[in-house]
Length: 505
Image 1 (tube, rainbow, N blue to C red):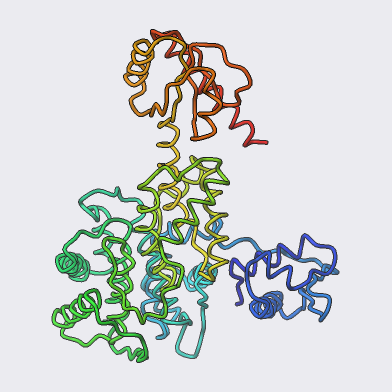
Image 2 (image 1 turned 180 degrees about the horizontal axis):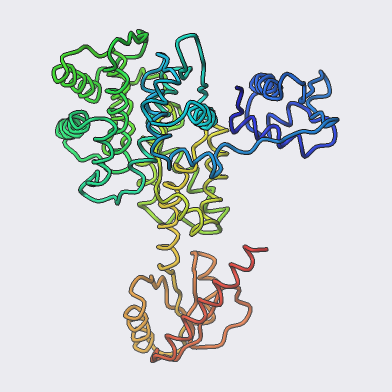
């Protein structure tokens, strides 16, 4: 059975909207993929439609969808029906068995006996499983011995990690207790008490050597990776093909990863493939808990440094959101600290899940969209792998926090015609009412325009009438009473509403 992944479904839907030929270059640009990838996807799509060439390709013309006969356009594999596999204990367990045993086959009879259901029910379950694993470039295969999942070891590991993260760990509260009791019970039932305990103990040893605590979501990521490592390597009788070529590093993180594998080998009295050191190393340097001492010869690390990336992101978001983030001294540094391990994750294909993704996307939609568009443009320019929505959501938190601090902190100019004593009284009362504000100058009306030319200002508070001023102006008395405070707040509210209406247009 051939299934389509998300990208191939997007290609079919794109062609379905066109009544004529669509040039391959245009398709490649819209889907952000190469022309060679498009050609491979077309072959898979036509195989999906039972060999009928539904997608026609002609040199010089491009691609066209053949709608001369009835065409069923496939649904996205990420819809609720497909996610249902992660809500069914039987499907989770069966998928875990198939992934763990791969490439060894399991017979339908053995599966039916284990799960106390009919063979026909097993066949239906396998269809659902095949649709779900397709997004990991995996497939259900059959031979004379039974049914198995075919694909690379890396993709099988990614699918197993997804099951652990979503079906077991996605609902627990992120507290200091790490993995809550309910999730631990489920993990023990699926992976065994000894394995769960050893993974937690090993992470504690890694943290001790790192001299720091691995925070969420990196703890869950490393924990699920270790569980998958045990599940894949401890299966009796499996002879897994070992990858022998990979880069070795001469730094502290690599030595910690080597010690972790030695600990597992002593604990289980078995040898683990050398590549497992590299896998753990990747998770350590992608955890974001400390400066990474990566060797200069590491060709996998891009020329676009984290600080350069942060600078580009801040400057472009300042323009797109019409907010000057340059005054937030800590924003670029905080972003760079997050971006450095993020770039490592993208290099190594490490996926992290953000449990607040939907809330962030809904609550801060404008900022989320701006960050996604800006980050995608930077990644394309720098030839980096595109970040997932989960990664975008983490970046959005930093920008939203800076945005709210920027809104709270105002640069204010006071315009006062009274004497020095009165103006100082006005200044002190404003500082008491709005302590986060910065009064950058106190000037008479005649000097205001010249002062504005020399420095940026968010709000003018004046005791005299002003003409031809584009900035928001709050008119107050020299004594700055409670009514004056209300006028200032009202002035700011009116200005924010005006800006939001402009943004909506």
